[in-house]
Image (cartoon, one colour):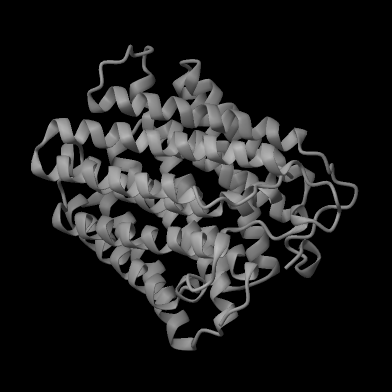
Length: 393
């Protein structure tokens, strides 16, 4: 699919074609990612020098500074309006403010960016009513809700379920969009809608009654993973070769980590307020599920967002395997009370992400930039693009 196939994703006439403006937004997000990794290692017990309040900003930098900026930028690119780039710019500015030690200003700027993401998502959903567009808008609303509580001074552990909802619904909505290739039944779409409603109900309930909300949210996360395992096209594309198979492997492993997270929310309901159970459940989502999606889709997101091409290499499996192996170590340390194992798992989590960044940058340099108007930079940017890489058997 190219941008011209869908009015929602068509680029604005006369829009800037060079990558410089977009790269300027990606750089603060990348800086936020690196800072979040460092802060996480300090928090987990490695004796690195702590830069002021940086360890306390680990979650906000990762979710708001990095993931939120990237998702908002992707949505602005898909919408194709220059005004849309204001919102990832606000989130990126918020990341820089957090790094500079201006916590309240950082929270306010990231919240403004999330409000813009909601606006863009609602505009798309109203113009082209569809369940996947509605799900994306609800995911954006979860991010805004969590950010509003953050600005209001709520502790991170109380609002972080909303950030989980943001990423889970955003990814699930994109996967639902792709499932149209398989002509899903009405019943499967109704089941998906019921699962989304359960996710939202669990998040809302957790705000007032944490244990009950965790149970409902955990059951909904398990149901989301089950739906993805049953209906996602990855089970078809994993039979292919090259990049298509690598993406499918990343997706399927990510779905497994989402199921692990759902089980932990159920088993540790009411205790996800700090300590090892909290660490295990959140990193099963943010590292296992979300970064599996990022690892898999970077070779197709980067061409669309930054207008650079990424050459697939079989060595990409190395950072994907290290991510999963290190996360197994981390969760084993969390749940078994083995603190040294937990620390090493966290360090290797960071190493996997850094290896991914290095491998991706090396592949960009090897492939060079794309400039032809018919190239990958015109393609649809959401996470669902992998179905188009090869025919369905």
